Image (cartoon, rainbow, N blue to C red; front, side, top):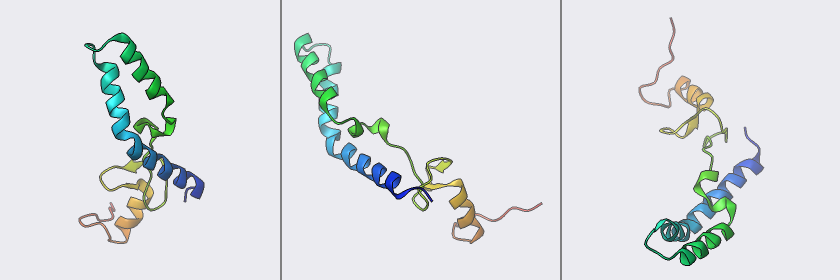
Length: 101
């Protein structure tokens, strides 16, 4: 089980990303628009830099929804490999059976 603080920090980042997504996208569009004057693009880039760092989507990290584990994460199921194995062994994932040979 991951530390509660790490899980809460990740939730806080997710909330910030959702809150600033529209503003960040609008500023990025201005910065990348070659037809706009250089001064306006520069002002937009300064405003973009003033936004909180944790509002950037690249700062998010996928975590297992059951354990909070950050590594070996299956995107489709939103759980880690360890949680996936436990769920499969308990028969809670349809079509998944324990292998033996």
